[in-house]
Image (cartoon, rainbow, N blue to C red):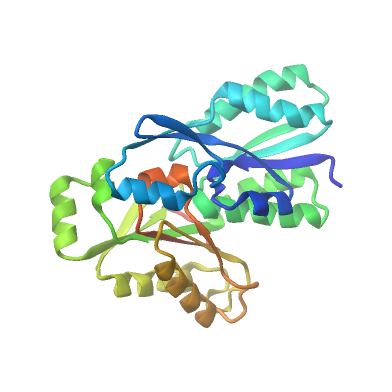
Length: 295
C-alpha cells in the first residue's frame, strides 16, 4: 500500500464505486435546486437523471465550489492517517476551487510540516478529469512515487482531450452562454454545437453542425485527428452524457469500431450534478489521450 493518497473533487463524474475500487478520495461540490442545497456526491443524494428531469420541467440550479474550510477538513483526515496527498482540482478555467485548495494546503503544511501536500490544476472537467485520475491510479499501482505522479500530471494534463456536443440549446441560453436569439435560430436550424476544452481549461466552441447524426460523426473524427497514435490509439476512452444514453452508446460503438486497439471497452458515465447543472440534458462528451491542447 502507498504512503500517499490520490484525491480529487466529485466533479470527476465517475461513481462512488469506481472511486473506491481505484482507492481515490474525493471532496464534494454543492449545488442548489429550486432553493434546496444538495451535495454533489456522485448520485448518492440525487441521481443526475432526476436533476435533468427536474431541470427539463423548469427547476432552477446553482452550483458552489468547495470552500477552504471544506478542503481543510478533507485534507486533514488523510494527513491524520499519516498519508501524503496529491490532490487534483477541477479546471481553473471553470472555477476557483484550485485557489481554495491551495489556501487550505498552505495552512495545513504549517500544521503538518513532515507531510507532502501537492495541489495540481487538472485543466479538465467531468469524466476527462476522471480519466486523468484513473491514469494516475494506474501509475501509482505500477510503483510511481507521489513526486513522480505530480510531475507527470502537470506534464501530461493537456494531453487529455475533451470533446462534447449538445442537442438542447435551451440550457446554454438559460445560463447566458449563448443569446436567446442565437438559441432560437440554432434550435430552428437543428444546430448541434461541437465544443472542446482549450489549453487554459476553458470551454471553447469549435463548430456548428446541423443535425445529431453529423455532430456524432464529427466528434469521432476529432478523436481520429487528435488521439495518440490516430486510429492505432491504444489508451482508454471515457464518455459521459446527460440523460441521452442512446446518443452516448452510438458514439461509443463508433469509437470501438474505429479504434480496434483501444484498451478495453469505452466506459460510459452520467454527467454529475455540478457539471450537469450547467449543461442540462442532451450533452455527450468524449475523452481520450492525444496530442497536447495548444489553443
